[in-house]
Image 1 (cartoon, rainbow, N blue to C red):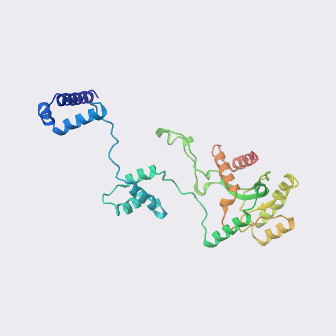
Image 2 (image 1 turned 120 degrees about the horizontal axis):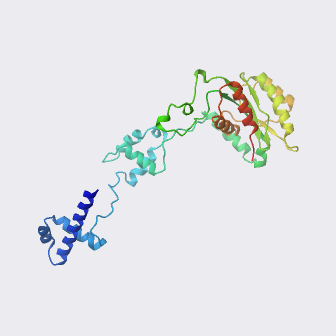
Image 3 (image 1 turned 180 degrees about the vertical axis):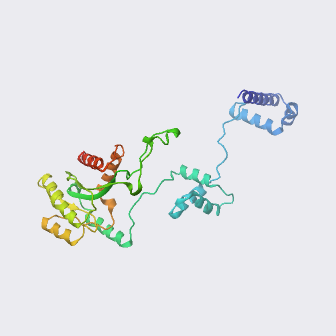
Length: 318
């Protein structure tokens, strides 16, 4: 550092001498010969002092970017479809239109400046053309619903939780040396361990009771859910509202047995488009519960059932 400071001071002294000699009547060439420096150095020293009043180096903006505004717009157009998966693909196609090629790192920096980030895709359902048509028809049919109308919809769903597996990634703060400490390891096992299924429903006025089960859901069990969980829960909701029940098009929801049970119990049903879990608010609830379970010690099926029931009972609409 001391050497650099000394070199900078000598450079500034030389520039000051150049300006002083020029002001004393020396020509630029004469000043250069006298100080044994180049003609360009003398000229630049005089220009710097006249324009900025200093002999120090001026602050620099760095090397000009290889990406022109036009190239940046081209990068933005290229960042679509399958090109999004790899900056090398974008770079290769960009370089086909440039006289001077750039590196993938340069393209990545440009994308960051434009607000892009390289992140995992959001998981969503696969839609066939018929699915899109039916979803659009559903949206148009119910677009006039008010907030109060939607509050009277009872959204329901089933989910499965495992003893040694969470739906979400478990994040922890740790140092490099703590990588293999017990509380920094997420335990897994072949088959994900013992599991517990849960059925639950929610509307703008509260939740239903939850059903925890071990076997797979089927039409017989679902008929019992409608009779023993849904109907008693509806009776506990505020009176004077006409509630509508929602479930998706899972095979045990659409069987003839279940249709007969719905008719027998006089349940008012909401029409539902196929392959549309993203429209069901309960889907978000499962993820919230899973995050809460991640912070609890769960080593057995009984503990999982206990914590699942506790978390469901804690659900608040406030």
